[in-house]
Amino acid sequence: MRENSSGIIVYRKENNQRLYLLLHYQYKGDYWDFPRGNIREGETPIETALRETEEETGLSPKDLRIIEGFKEHSKWFYSLNGQTVFKTVTYFLAETGNADVKVSEEHVGARWVSYSEALNLLKYKNSKRMLQKAESFLKALESLSR
Image 1: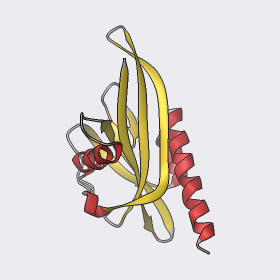
Image 2 (image 1 turned 30 degrees about the vertical axis):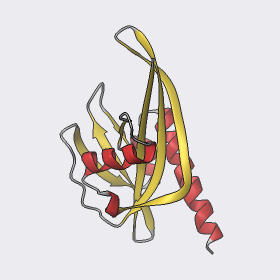
Image 3 (image 1 turned 120 degrees about the horizontal axis):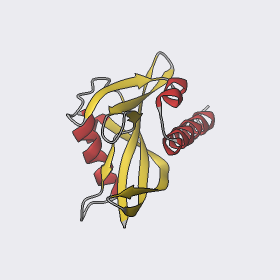
Image 4 (image 1 turned 180 degrees about the vertical axis):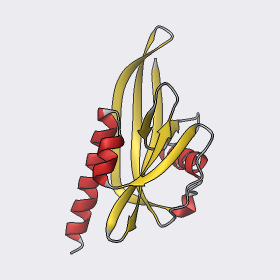
């Protein structure tokens, strides 16, 4: 069985520091992660990522500036009702100027945190790896624009 999801690693700048948005999940455990969700039939990964981010955070597509060139995939297996599921999540990267997050009922909180705080809060290796890729990508973009 296969499952495809997509999400967005959202960040904003405050006092020359990058802050990342993490959501507090309590579904199948207690952990922090990025906004994401399952791709519906007929949706593209970016459409899903934008829809899920708006549903889970209140940040609309107008609030987000998708960073071109960043599209990463995270893959893993998990067990569901005795079946092995192969999960693929496609992550995009976006900047926002809106710090006001309205968390959906499926989450118990949200935080804007520094890169190092995010690495500490993220539970799963795949999520940490996605954050590291996003941070490296943004640093490379910054060095090109100097």
